[in-house]
Length: 237
Image (cartoon, rainbow, N blue to C red; front, side, top):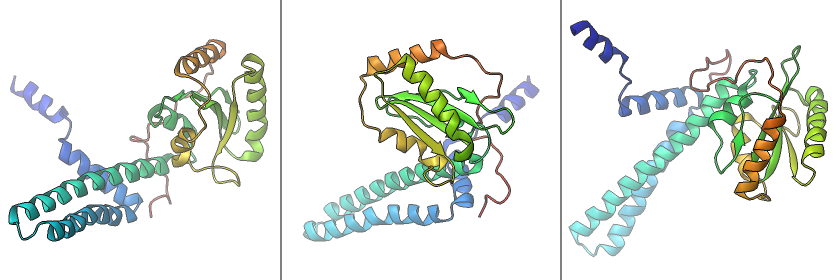
């Protein structure tokens, strides 16, 4: 029984504060500016609260204390938001350029009603270039992973296939990478959210189901988990 208890304790996940500290350490390692942005985000509301307290407090210690406490709480909240954003960016920077990176983002980083699949809809077995698909209020978006010179034809082919099946649904093309006209991996979720809304929620579901029913399964590995991926050499600064 004692061994069982010890094993269960060893398997317990770290506490919330320890997890946050680990996230902060990882973020600071890959994004040194994150700690200074967090410090600025924490101190700015406190200074604002102190200024408002002096201006409106009229010498009342209780009122001044309330404004300062409010500034501290606001600073903590904003600092945590900054940490979350920079941590996500740092996590994506570790897998950027690896096969399946776009699939990892589509699986874990989409918001705003967008539906994506970690499995590509087209793949080049020799180069590992791939095309992924996301469906949302902005229509159908095809996302290429690999150099533009190699993936343009793949994108065009998939666009023609979808246009034949769904002629009235807008189709957008996005290339992820460092080529001209491409976007960096961490910008993918925000780029999707900025798409002009043309479909209703029921239409998004109908379009997604229609495309999934036509999709042929591909014998390729799933996307990478950005939280478990090993960093590439030369990525850490």
